[in-house]
Length: 443
Image (cartoon, rainbow, N blue to C red; front, side, top):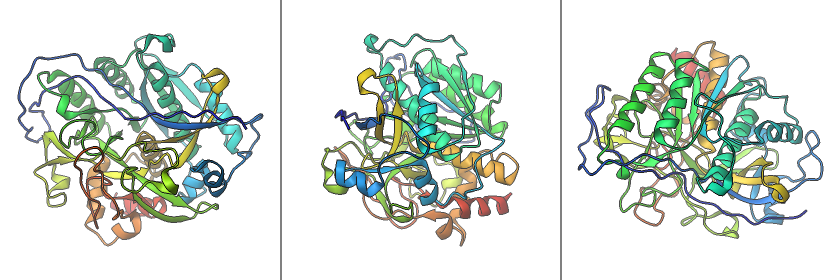
């Protein structure tokens, strides 16, 4: 099969914002003022090495994880592998729930790409609704506004969500551009119309760049407070550039740092060819890069103290920090332990790509929560208070895989993984069956 070597990195950069005192029952952390600039979010989902199949057939993906390692130097996981590895019960599919995904620009081929993905992995046909509340953008990668990266992100978000929760409806809300205001308007549309009980936002910007303009944070937080009042669960990626995210010092990403949002960090997940869970450690290619790091370093999980938000009550006495910290939870994120995603807008380079990054984790946790909502029969709403409550019980060790190996020092300082909560991986990754049992009992 023909191969295309393609490497990308990073999760998000933006212009600037200043710290503000938000109506959260929290005290914002002061920050120095500087001239306001327009907020622009960028995504660069991590993708590598196309495997082009001549024909998509049900259950026809040609490689097991170990065969991918032997042939390409990277493991390849099907949605069934990930469901098995994270102990998602076979009968639990998220039926009756809707997963809301917010992206900019969208993908010109997302419907056909999802159909190819479903056929390849033997998944039921998806129900995908696409909304363009501010108008449908024209896909033009030559504009150099990041349209290709956003199209990749859209493919990852939609296909990953359907793979993990194949019974759930997917509502994709597309902003016409990647400005913070446009993405906030897309989020507001999703919340105002209560499209679903869970929403994924796989984009972010380092808080260290948020100086001199508090409007964007305040606008977003108003939307998140409305979502919380409507019992919606919100998820965002903690970042792919380690603790510093390309800045001089450790910095959390916004919106994952908002206390109303569950921040998802990243791991290296090792599964057998049958999907059985073997082990997991902190995703950091500079520290512990799997399988000989044959394709080089892609990145490392985010996770750092916030400079915008004080410690929320659910983190009191847990994080060892005076401010809000990310990550809250984690999920597989390494390109070397990749989820396979189909891209159909690249012409001769169309095919299945090895994908990673914490952009994988945000829609995955949204899918897990949609499944939990379906099983329990009601929306769980804000997840952080519920998840941190489990941390203080005997159920924690069965509900989460506690990640204790590695750190997120990547091109700068970082924080270590350790027993219990840590900044790179939060509370850990889920054992979904056990977690749902505890969440149901907590309700």
